[in-house]
Length: 280
Image (cartoon, rainbow, N blue to C red):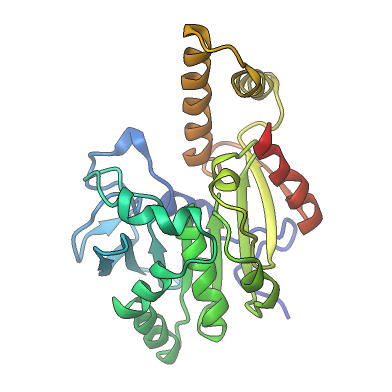
């Protein structure tokens, strides 16, 4: 069956460049009300990215869960539920509440919060109205999106994650969800450091701005040097700070909106090899 949201030559989700802007923080526009990132709080009825209106906000202060439902103002794009990742950038909050779900793959606190806060009911309403939504998220948000897809597979059009942390191995192995898309930035570490979880089966991509060019190799050399430097000294401290800044920027960088990004599809076996890079 041909899927109307898949680019046939590449296998990419046709809305991945829009969804990446929704799911990831955009630090250079942190204080701009028009910033479409889920890491920024928006007002109900606000239009973001020129074509999506914030319809509802779903939030649970106890677990840190935060999500927004967005409807297209025009065109044929589907409704989308955007789930925030680890903490917010503005206002800065919910880091402590989010932490357990980040580091323990089997925890489903935020999934349950999505149910009690009304996000899952919204998904079902959209489905029954003939508009099954997409569910997307980055980092922790990607984990929760996968959990929703695994538990409610028949209500979604597709699920898209960016640099997602893992779900439990049992959930990954038993999921019957379809139309799953995972995007990982080349050289990603944070998603794999967070926990030992797995990913529900789907189409997997490694993305970068220019592939393994000289700049990328230099960054990798710095990260590896910081990891293997044993002597505690000012040089090591500076190396670690620089390496963490590079990795944080890599984890959150907007890639798919750049000119001619490098997008490579990989299989699950290659993903396992890719994940091992978190140790070096």
